[in-house]
Length: 168
Image 1 (spheres, helix red, strand yellow):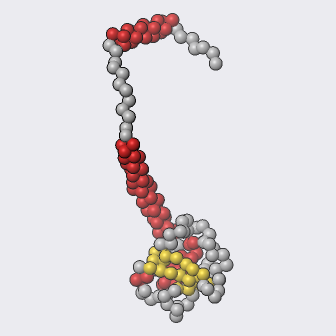
Image 2 (spheres, helix red, strand yellow):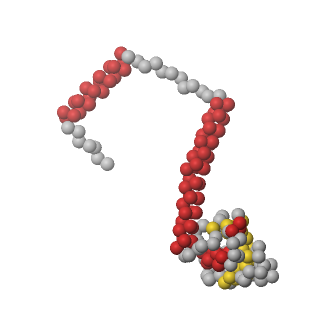
């Protein structure tokens, strides 16, 4: 890299400014203060405070926004697909349009009412499980105390059957 050409007039101005600063520092020296050394306890307190603040910022700013956005997005998707009888509260399911982890499941039954007809699962997405669950809960005729879809398990006797578990 080559030198930068500085006009003589600017160079003379900078030289004068540097000489003034040097002379000013010579006439008015600033006392040099040794750095203050913190005790181990003070350092530990600082670290705890910083860690606590960071955790609080993370929890207060990041998680609620993500959860709110995720639940709001899930409600919008459910509403757009005609969900009427249930609310989605499956914690480990993120995007409703992603595949669910139950390959081969074709039927959904409700764990609380054995006399209800099972519903067909129309596809392999989380949304398809919600649609089947909403159909089963709609047939529950007012069992509104348990309309929050919490999780699914595979039937012990038939892996093609999922069992719907709800809460209130």
